[in-house]
Image (cartoon, rainbow over all chains, first blue to last red; front, side):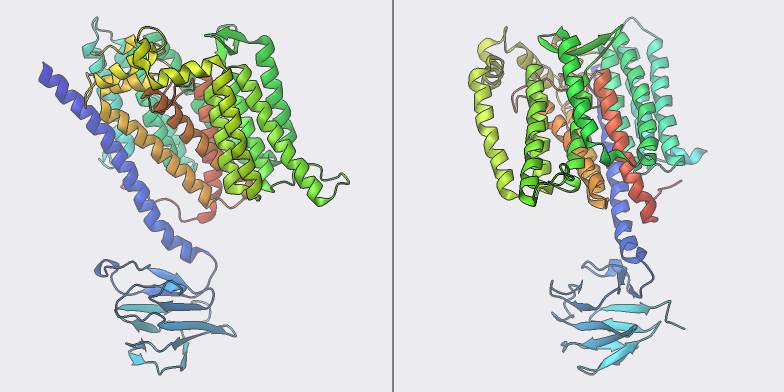
Length: 150
Length: 425
């Protein structure tokens, strides 16, 4: 009789903890999807879309980066877009906006920036168009611009 | 239809818990009462209905109500085990609370005038305090109940909500609430506003002192200081407020006999086990006689703890359902506070920000103060554990603030348009 009571009490406590863990799990998945929507929800600006599989990289990268304003990309925390890839330099590249057009410039990085597999010459500004593939270090992005593209 | 029975949905666990709890109670409590099972089914029905209404009308953050329904399940189970009639009354108050929750949720969003009623909040608050003093009934040494017919009611729970609403109006634009039309210059106006704020806070504390509600005084001062810290502009003013609490606390300790007794009992209850220390020692005995998994519902002796329905319900839960359940209850409150803080950060309008911070702080601190008092971490005070303690006014006010929090979260929920991940429908 004592065993049954102990078992019933144990199951009781187990049910409560299963509830707590399922709520935490739902909350975690909610947070994970929230950051995606946050960078994409505000208006129709161009954005960078990650091509690599996020699980293959062992550092934190977002699926999309919104390019509403001029952004610098690099490993140091002072950049707008921080990617802690070992093959990306401290200040790797810069995306600037001139008259509604988007330009990418390499800031003297060690391993270079590649647009559509062609290396960017140092200091040379390349005008980005919809569908360009940008590669820095191990990450590869797709430049998506639905307003000015096509 | 059968999709709802997947193991991942948290609601299933609540249903399972209630079924298990009431069956165990039925088996353990002799003589066998079939009403126990009917009551359990009624509770399950009530919770499921409310949850599905929230899901269908997309009422915002659904996790808030999930966490709260787990808490009320545990509370109603425990109170029903202690005394069937009290349990039924608690269930009725819970039903009223849930209806109010939906009502507040809808009306809060419809009427957008809540931030302009600062003066009305102050007047209503003082009015409630005066009514309690004049017409109140003296129960257990404190005059803080109003009895109408068979229903007793504690107005100070409503006063706490009014105070938080007033703080939200004030800090919407700090120090610029009053005297806008008058011909004072800027610095004088700021000083007058600060004076009004401090004065109103002290009026609240003074009235609560007359009602011997030390727990509520602690709660209100902490809410005031935290909101002042987060939203206030002036560091010196904030430091002055903190410094002012020290003489008030010392004054309370040396001159108010009741507080001195409480603190001495906290430091050493074993010196007067049969007298002043009886409550806290019985509570400690109850908690430790439960072990990890508890004695089982109906097999312990939680009725030996005085005031077990209201203040010491946590000890009863720990005795019959184990220390691990007590830890789970604390975790649930922490989850609730976390969701509240997330709502605070997401909301854009300042009035709603301050309001939700006040509500979240109130829930979290109230839980901490009463659980801390029950386990002898801090001196014991007389406030209730939200959603679990027996008490109509406590339940009603807790559901009202939950409704406000839910309404505020829906505001942003609609804007974000991405929303929650819906698992396994």
